[in-house]
Length: 94
Image: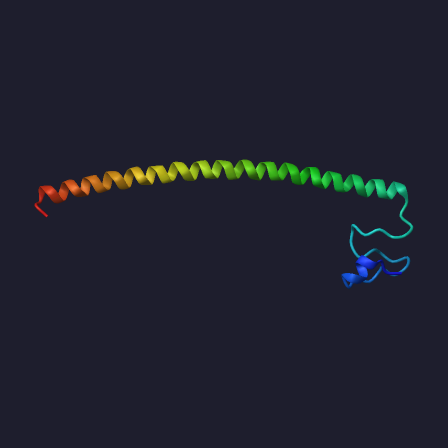
């Protein structure tokens, strides 16, 4: 029998005795030990993803700080160039 959610998604149930459709699918004969193992695997994956997300947030924060510093440097250099350019025009009577 195909579960309602799988039928709605257009998925077929695995052939009896055959491998499940996906690594996260469970056959009807799954033991509590197998369920616990799969649950622990999922928890490990989630923990790793959380660590990666924290690392990425830190990288994004550092990149934003570096971007702000670079933009400030550019503003300062533009200001100096503009001031130098205005001074040159005045000296040459332009």
